[in-house]
Length: 481
Image 1 (spheres, rainbow, N blue to C red):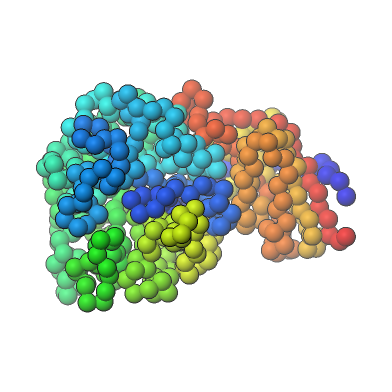
Image 2 (image 1 turned 90 degrees about the horizontal axis):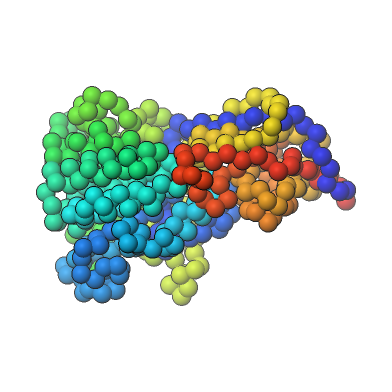
């Protein structure tokens, strides 16, 4: 059987945000960046956004080298260097326009996802530096810029050098310049700690009215498009210099209960709303249970329980959760980096659990289908706000082949049934048989196609990318040999 024209009615398919988006960290002080082709093949669907973590301290001695390669650690913990031990951001004023970070941006966006760019920055940089960064980021659509995250902490270099009031004012200044240069970039303010005796106290009704340093940092909330906080149910914060043993609680690792986590999230959201008089929801931008604390099976059990509590509680204020991270040199990843070869990942028990969890409709962008007539144009605005094309195919049985033939020039993200597939330019045939095999035969098999930019950037630095499907797909559907 040869490929033939797809005869089903063409539909316009519009993506809308999930009730609670799922995002994924990819690369940090603890792991390397993993390419999106591999992540998509392992997890079976794209995320709303991929979080990258970089730093920018251009006024420092040793810059632009990674700090751990040029300085001796002081204090025996991961933040004991002069500046943060993240990948150096090589863009900015007088920066490299072809730096590796921009290829990572392109890789993420061509696969139908957005970038959450976490960037720690020296608050002493000039407006010219900020303007240069904004121009660097402008071509990448609705990029989410998470500036100086965990800003009410004490571990990052910007907190050690500046007061909390100065950190808050810097966020406002940075956001103002970004909006001038790239108004479609969205700023994320990340903070929200409570004092230890409040969050982890023995009395459940001992809830503080205030967040730490809230009067100094509150201006950042008004300047941000999104609010977020970071919290781990367990974290080995002494990594990689100190081991984690059961007797070291509070010395090298921390633990909190699910109940304490929900108290934190609800209190942070309530205070953010009270401080601003508006409600922008809340995202949990770094979340995990460290497998070094109690082992990898306990990690899987506790992490799954929290995600299932989200599905049960359905808190309207929680707009997104970022799992930190895909591959890790210790035990914070869905994969653990093979110490013999950092290009190889060793699967954690939670990986297969996570793969199923993120297919729940509550975590998926919704699709609205409507009959379509006219030019087969598609518009990509973001991973949860775009227009594509769709078809519904009646399956007569369990196929042994279901393949789609596209023009080689198209860059596409394809949902077939519950499976997601990527087609890069130069490829023409996409095999979706595996998704068709799992589809319930009583319903038509849906195929929806979206077209993010092939090079990951928006022409003219606009907030959207528009394309016309070169040709309608053809299909090869075979039930027996």
